[in-house]
Length: 150
Image 1 (cartoon, helix red, strand yellow):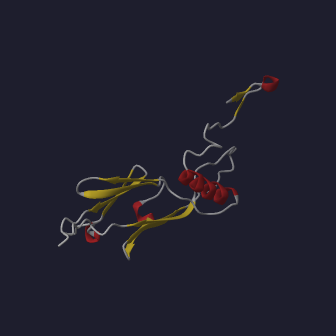
Image 2: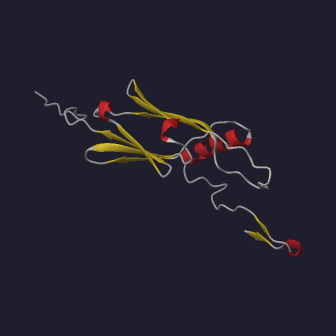
Image 3: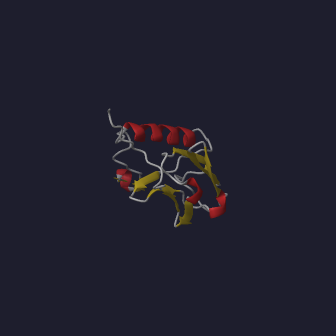
């Protein structure tokens, strides 16, 4: 959005969805993300895509600006937890920052795993800001059982 008042031009960030969340879940995410960053908190919640295919589940976390050593991935009591920290590099004195929207700080996301996965074969890779976890399904474990009535 451009503001042409007094023959000067200023750039103002515009987002059509600023006040209208698309779902209750996004409203909750926005509340925690915005309130933590505005209050000077050091917590953010990376966005996650969850995909299921015939042989596995895939989690894709958007966490740009980290190194693969910055992640801690654990499986405990059928919960997969991914955590880490993205540190803010010091502001340079010669730059005039108008806005910093990139999220920094510690993060932790936990996911309940279904019974039919093989946690010993989870594979993780980090490429172009996306942490991808592949959780293979265990064909021997069945989630569905049919019971015959006698």
